[in-house]
Amino acid sequence: MNCDVVIAGAGPVGLLLAAELKLAGVSVIVLERLTELDMTIKAGGIRGNSTKLLARRGLWPLLQAEAAKYSNGFASVTSQRKDPADRSMKRFGSDRSAGRFAGHFAGLLFPLSPKSPMPSNTPMPQQALEQVLGAWLEELDVTVLRGHEITGFAQDQKGVDVYSVTAEGAFDVHASYLVGCDGGRSTVRKLAGFDFPGTDPLTTGYQAIVSMDNPDLLPLGWNLTETGLYHYGAKPGWLFFLEFCGPPPNRDAPLTTEELESSLRRVSGKDVTITGIEASTRFTDNARQAATYRMGRVLLAGDAAHIHPPLGGHGINLGLEDAANLGWKLAAVVQGWAPEGLLDSYTTERHPVAAAVLTNTRAQISIMRPDAHSRAMRELFGELIQTTPWMPVRLGNMMQGRGIRYEMGSDQHPLVGKPVPDISGIDDAMRLPRPVLFDLSGSAGLRTAVDGWTDRVDVRALTVLTNLGALLVRPDGFVAWAVDGEVKAGDLISLREALTRWLGEPKGQSLASE
Image 1 (tube, helix red, strand yellow):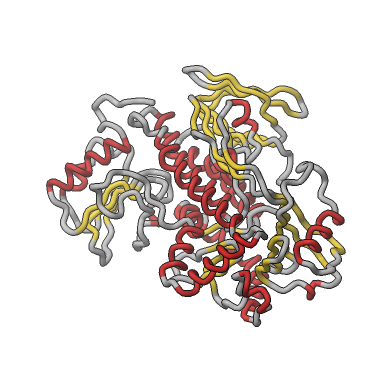
Image 2: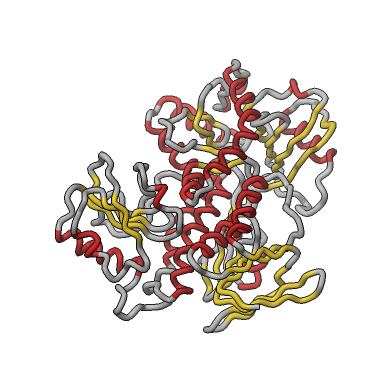
């Protein structure tokens, strides 16, 4: 069997990447080792940037419907956080009486910043998102093959032969590219030989949805203790806790009620009894990142490229944004119009973003440690959150993935390299993963300037009140060129430079290829 791209892994990252490629006209096959949807407790929602990305592809009504099924549980528990906190925890910098909040850093709540048009978080289990994306791929007629475990591959200058096994026997595919979206223990990453440096774990942690015979013993919200940290009640029965005891002796051993209960008792100091487990999983603070996201015709995205502790819900959002960044670039290479270096810009742009997440999750671990020095640092950090006005904004941007700016040159418009601002009509014009040039000033010269690129870029006129004159927006939602006010002749020159940089030479001239 032949196709343009093989994707290993049918999690949210692999599914979104498959959709982006298919919408761009690239043939794709997804190979998934598991035969059924993995029901292990995982991410509990997606945040602003990811929500916007999926909304632009027309999925917002489906996401909204899924989120409504789970928001009541979150809201009922959140409202209870206005109850007075256990003041004995104040010395550790934990305040559960904060009321409305934007998020937490190592269990330290920070206030809610001004609302954006999309909610800062869209609550839903990862499995619900996978079902939404899976149904979307069925509509797009994308082939997703479950029960296919990749055992090897061979690449050369012409493509990649991917070998897998199924219950029926061997299954081989020839493709131009292979993308590993197969999680933190990625088979593709290991087989390809990607360097995966990082830091070893200090903790063993658990997420679980349980029933208990004495749940009132556990205060709601974040609780720092002498041995670790726990959170109870993001929704009924939901627990998140970790202790500084090093990694588990056997990460793959079945997780028993006894292990979960004994760890919770050690961390909380409460004699709670777990009577039933709906879902549970272990985790550690192992933090690693591939040195590069590309080796020849093999690429990595999502947890295959970077792992870190689940503090702040970064993982799923990092992966979705990896997929959006990679999808259009890989499609451009497959279709032959990519400028030189476009595919390598995937690593250049996304690697620093994940590196920053590894830094902030390591920092969170450092101020949760039970030693006196770490607790003193935590107390000081908590005071800064409460007394320094810019701190909650900075933390909110960091934890929500806002504030990203890809390096596209220092002499550019301030918006270049940043996510496109919220302007009426932009989202509706980005249903397909194609660059869009938005004319906001009625410029007669813009359409003439894009002659030669009309097969690769759409032009849309918008009538809105804004100081902006025009915007070139990449398919991943990032601004590639912008100008304020009236579009002048010099602006058209810089526009053509941006078009050449991201979309290659205009039609009729020679195209550089990867």
